[in-house]
Amino acid sequence: MKKTEELAEILESGAGLAETMLDILKAQQQAIVQFQSAALGELLEKQQSLVKPMEIMEKKRQDLTIEIGRMSGAPKETRSLKELVETLEKDEAAKIQKCGNRLHAIVEQVLTINNQNKVLLENSLRFIQRNLRIITSDYSRKFVDAKI
Image (cartoon, rainbow, N blue to C red):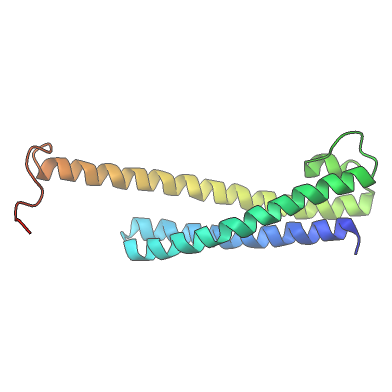
């Protein structure tokens, strides 16, 4: 297997992981909106289980990009796909570019949904804090008066 084919497979694998992450983030968004804390906890565990495989995939991608760059005679250490594509033959470059573009598009969606979820969580936290402040008369009373 050629190194460029291996890189294309890694990029496709990364895109698959990113799509799974995107689906989890969308489900988290629904759980936040619908106040489903149990579902949110489960989704968070699923999300965390994807982090390590994504880190491993990214490390492989970087290492392979550098290696292919060296093999293709790149003048400097090539770390980005954009730089690598410039050094490859037309067919290989097109395949790597296509896979890279797909991964990039999915990652952009992940970032967008993640930022939206952050805003929703921050708003929920402010809502809870505001209600606690009202219930406890600006924290001057105990929330629970009974002794245990």
